[in-house]
Amino acid sequence: MFYGVTDIWTYALGALFIVLLPGPNSLYVMAVASREGVAAGYRGACGVFLGDTVLMILSAAGAASLLKTHPALFMLVKYAGAAYLGWVGLSLLRQALANWRGEAPAGGEAQAEASKPFQRALVISLMNPKAILFFISFFIQFVDPQAAQPAVAFLILGVILQILSALYLSALIFGGAYLAAQFRSRQRLAAAGTASVGGVFLGFGVKLATASLS
Image (cartoon, rainbow, N blue to C red):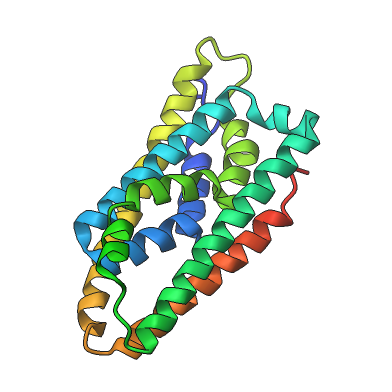
């Protein structure tokens, strides 16, 4: 046992696999980096870090038990999250269609979209089905309930996850920016990629709508 963490290496390995699984957080950050560059990608990543931190705190505070004892609250959370992820997916599909047709977005609309990677990534992170199920089922299992200072154990688990997430998102940000530079002259290919991401977001919305805590 390490400061209240029951099996730190098993947790680290499991967290690595969870981080590497495709999810709305990573796809959105990569999409932002490919559209708006590395700096915007990192603003989105900061939104992901904050959202994950909030979910960690809620998990440590007993959110899983609260959701299990109040099914109506869980239903509200999951359907609100599913609707938001679906809306993001439809927005990306609309953008892909405009790019396919060669239509440039209006200046004001483009500027508004470019100014929101942090806020949108934060909301996506809070509604991310992969993160929600991870924090309320897997994350809390590695803290000894008899530990003298469980907050330290939660902090250690959180730091491990955030380091892994930062490394992975950094790779996606630079990879997305590089691919965008390669596809800049291939507008329809880039539009097809955006449409694919939009379709995946719709899938995440359906997955969250059908998720359960059992």
